Image 1: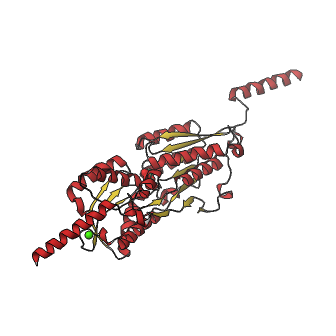
Image 2 (image 1 turned 30 degrees about the horizontal axis):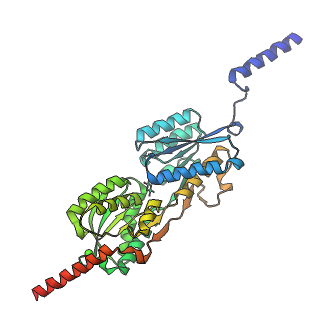
Image 3 (image 1 turned 90 degrees about the horizontal axis):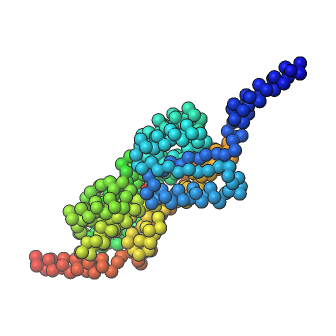
Length: 366
Ligand code: BGC
Ligand code: CA
């Protein structure tokens, strides 16, 4: 009998040493360390970097409550390429990531990514780039942190309408129509589609007639916007009465192009994001307004949600306003430039020139 017992315990010992820790399969809640993998669509987008910093800060700030060393956030740069990101996600899943926080490169790939995550039972927190509702409904372990693109478009439109009403000189050619250029973000991004549409609709609803001189994509990038506006200034010059940009970085790129021109032109420009360089520009009167897109709050919520999911805590227990148990919405805020700093002197003198010229012309025809 004794012999048999010794033999049995030998078998048990060998079994447990084979599996590493114990013969029992480790469950998520027993894991000592949680890996949260964060995928950025690219790592040189100013706005996304601010958001990433907020994730990092939140992770550090909560170390005491969350348990230092029991979780980590790892970041991946998708280099704006769908295939690269999909492979990164695939690898993270197979190396045991507990939660995926995804700033998706290509919204059309959401289904594929969700299928992979679902099969491995790894929850996803999407942020900033929103998969379509049909995809978000594919599984109950999908979340989204973001803002409503419609709201940002409407706020941009209101800023423009206010400015037009307070500055009749904005109508440079005096035809009662607002001639504008639209600078767009990446084409398939929900914010590009919604900001473009709702900004113009809001301006029209305010009773202002508009004429689109050009609509171009600068892919959210300052340098691309600079080069596009350089070309468009050559084509339209002073006919441009407004530049409306889907984000601040492109608005600033437009301003760079304008500033490089020898001739003094002032073109009211409006962006979205409220990034620090945009706020500086706004204070100098270079932008007529922007719409605050709270990157800090988004980063914080991505970190919180991911942490809860990793630790098996029901996110709804801390976050009351989780719409349909899936969406965490944050509000945009309108930022209008202070009225008195808006119109630079160069513009005023230019308007005086133009009106003097008009008087001359009209007296000639008399
Ligand atoms: C921001 C842009 C940013 C883009 C990235 C938008 O919501 O306004 O500045 O480049 O997201 O996806
Ligand atoms: Ca006009």
